[in-house]
Amino acid sequence: MITILITGAAGFIGSNLSEYFVKKDYHVKALDNLSTGHLHNLEHLNDYENFEFVEGDIRDINVCHNAVKDCSFVLHQAALGSVPRSIKDPITSNAVNVNGFLNMLVACREAGVKKMVYAASSSTYGDSKALPKVEDEIGKPLSPYAITKYVNELYADIFNKTYGLNTIGLRYFNVFGRRQDPNGAYAAVIPLFTKQLMNKQSPVINGDGSYSRDFTYIDNVIEANEKAMLTQNTLAVNEIYNIAYGERTDLNQLVSLLKSSLSRYDVDVNDVPVIYGAPRSGDVPHSLASIDKARLHLGYDPQFDLRSGIDEAVKWYKDNL
Image (cartoon, rainbow, N blue to C red; front, side):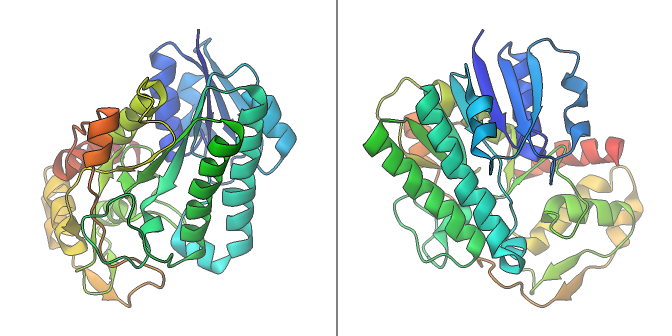
């Protein structure tokens, strides 16, 4: 049985990856320090013999060394997300996202891991105004978080060239779906707005609602991780890929889609007004991915557009909030 280490496994993306690979009969070692992840995201996996939870922090090199033992692959999702969080506390964001990432690279190299697939970020495009975003054309980062994710890419490249460690970076674009936490100061927009609308509370849009994003459903991200992990294409390894759906939606359109989906369960959601606030520091105005490179080299073929993804996510939140 092939063993995979998934870091950040109690978080949104990590828990979905853990569930998927456990059910595909991999042995999954799930590492998390539970600072932003939750054990309840993984409790349904405890009955599987091929699932193992390890509580630990990637900032501790010994934790990383122990976690990667006997692992063929590592899916590295552990990070402190959120642009606003990094602006408020850049030191901790750097410690987790850069020092922790470097620890994982060292541990993977010394353990002889076949490949480390890691969560990169669309924030790396920074102030680049070009649309769609193409992997080789980036701008200057607009936040400490964006800097940390770009540094990850640079470190991964050096570890391949210097030590022969194979990596693939997946630049996620605004991932959403089941188990994404709607609570807390740094909640992502889709779960936050969904919860607010369900409770008849007005969502607050930062700016005039014209900022746009390439929202990406979780199952598309799972597909990308699996294909990146298993690819035998030597041209596909040690590269960076945009992982998105390839369509742009502004925040006003997003609220309309959420209301449309939620109104199937409660028609009064349509009457909840939207509040507009000041633009948020560090935000990229527009984001749209070219996914041609991932299609070509990884065979990435995302099945969920925004509307179908929102319908799935809303169904989950209705049953679990």
